[in-house]
Picture 1 (cartoon, rainbow, N blue to C red):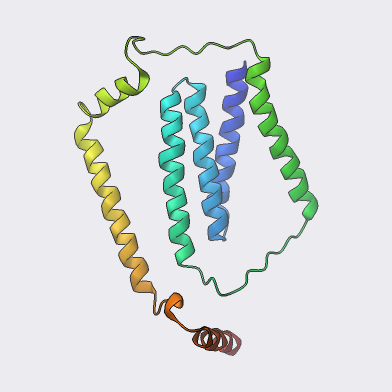
Picture 2 (picture 1 turned 180 degrees about the vertical axis):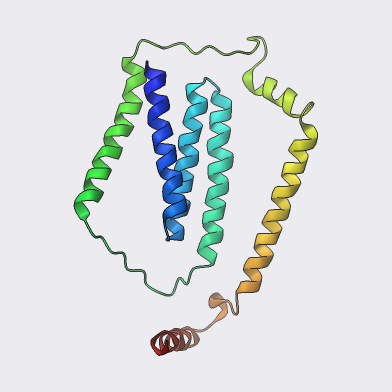
Length: 192
């Protein structure tokens, strides 16, 4: 019963987070929702009793989204102030209370429930991490290495593209040059 409730709950939260990722026009909101969605995906692994894969999901994929977050920050004009419009603060308050209640319920439910044991489908003489490592580095070694090379190529390409987009580094400019650059940007925006 608890597993079914947790499954549907995390399924709804995961779909909601990825819907926000696709539908929002704010890049920072999209990246934050994507990181939350990746964390909610790891909950499915914990429900299935695959603790190692759940932790790897959090570390690797959420860490990758945070790296994407850092790359996204490089493309923003940090000298410009961002003003957020809060149309209805009551909705934000209600959603915050619901999220806090949900987190407390998720933490307390296993303690209150009678289902305490986890059944691992692997040999108890061999650890979970060791069994995964044996399969990963024997049967799936070539796909594992190809994925590593593809991620390396994507990272290098992202760095090269980010370097080409920058006209001049703001860290190497004097305060007067930054002020003149801001004024020229305001003049261009006002002219259009």
